[in-house]
Length: 320
Ligand code: PMV
Image 1: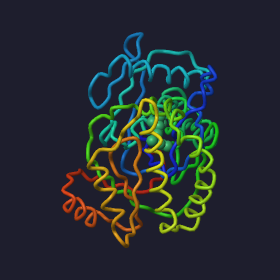
Image 2 (image 1 turned 90 degrees about the vertical axis):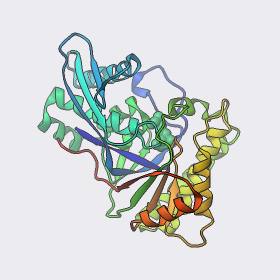
Image 3 (image 1 turned 135 degrees about the vertical axis):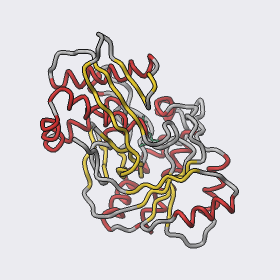
């Protein structure tokens, strides 16, 4: 089962306090909006394990006990959802993009795991039927594994408000050219960032501003107007990082290279591409036309070396 990553236009940053009920896990303090990616995917299979313990292989390597515990918990959820006896599973998963670097690997990973576990329990045709008839349930189940995973179960654009995400249909195709300035694993996991968000003196003001920003983004999306959407993307990304950086303890995801690129983009008098940044140092540059050549010039000029990942609007999970 293949599930894509997504890039948040309006970010999920901060969780509601835990209620103690796993059904309420990862409920966000604000609604968020994202574009489903096409190329950055996690491919996962779930089969019966040969022993009585869950096994997990990630990118060909046996995973550590911490990661196994997380997927075991999620397998518990999927078994409980379908009311099936819990048997040990062998999970084999691979990302085709660097993990932990601001391309949401946990989003694609938990979306793919949710679908692959369903396929293991109810079969391919059953999973197809389930996904098309109850996207809300699929999304809510994926959310309990990782919040942003609820926006990776469909496409092309997703709005997450409350317990699950819903599809925003649109014919609009955008490119997301990702400038990977570092693929090293991020120092502060986003789960920590969500916890400290509310300690930032900027957090409450941010929450009051978000409904208007979300409405403006949805309007720009409906009008397919990148000239309106772009500046909103940039303000939103910089605000989320300002909240992260002023939390206690601070979560600093941006590298000097990230800031050099941000300044270089902001200093252009005219442009048809706009950035956003998730919880990592890498820039996602959104545009209607391919802009790789323009970005290579900017990288040259700023002397920043980055690997470039070309992505675009995607339709959602595949191969089931
Ligand atoms: O789903 P998590 O816990 O990895 O959090 C995702 C946080 C951001 O990527 C920064 C924003 C978002 O909405 O995806």
